[in-house]
Length: 150
Image 1 (cartoon, rainbow, N blue to C red):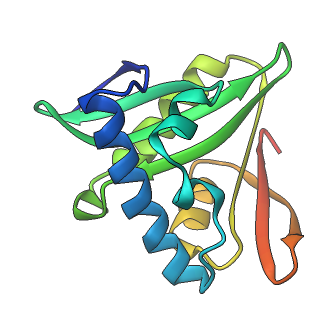
Image 2 (image 1 turned 45 degrees about the vertical axis):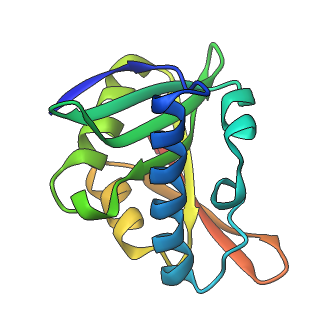
């Protein structure tokens, strides 16, 4: 697996990333029994317009996962982590988050996931993230916020 900086575009990479993002968030929507996850409904134009820094994980030349974040001088906010559902349980998500952690230096890292998304919560906790709080972001849709270091 090769992890590298990527920039979503309106070409093949952008289309592949959007398709993978939709597939990954469809899995989360089933886990949390709610499909109101904003990236699940993004268009290619929406994806390209986001002001995020991206890394892609490639298995040979095939996009297998991606992570995107925003950052300030003090905080790195992981906005999304997506792995091709056919590539789950191969360490791709963990490798992507560890790369973000390495790039963050001594800055605090924050991330949120669906409260009922046990696989994602387990991943973040295994990597040393601590649960900060559960928040109902819209009626009936709960997320858990994590931070590293706690």
